[in-house]
Length: 254
Image (cartoon, rainbow, N blue to C red):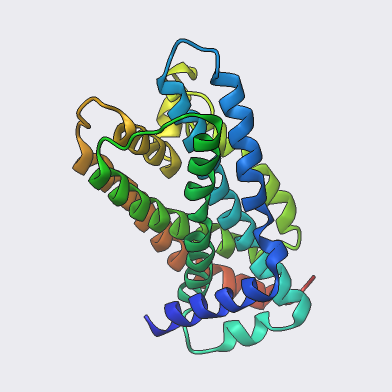
């Protein structure tokens, strides 16, 4: 827990000194305006909620994903990666804490999207506030765990930015953020359920819908389980990854 909090404090300090790392938050109002404009003249009022939620989930995943790669790349460039690995604290906990700091700050995307919707004249009602609160917390946890796994895998690579770009928009599509999973091909839908964002999107939409939210505990459990799976996989893979880069002597390669 100490390593987790230390990583959280470290990344908070880094973000305070490098506000450019928060540039993704600047895109949330723009995406919200675009999506609201696309749904403005439709006869389906539920689309407005989707237009507001999509930029939020996109920002959450993008910030966590790009932070995961940038942590490794920057530590390599600054020559601190070797010292971090050699420290007695768990690297996974440190990385998770740093990603959790970014995830926490990126929750400001909710306020941005809601403010833009209000200015557009769209009123989003939260019919199930408890479901919304629980889903936000579970999504933040799953985001940190999944991004930690990616950060560990990027230790092996010297081109983390390339992999970051390839894991953004495919995830948006497969998770049903932009297009409902029900509209995807049948063979893709099981894959979508392995992506935590699909559960987050469904739960958030249920929280905003007037209809009763069904199977909430089961869906929350699935969301948390995916986050735990990411953290566990990151811990297991870390040992193998570190052993490999030590043998190859590629840990500090830029």
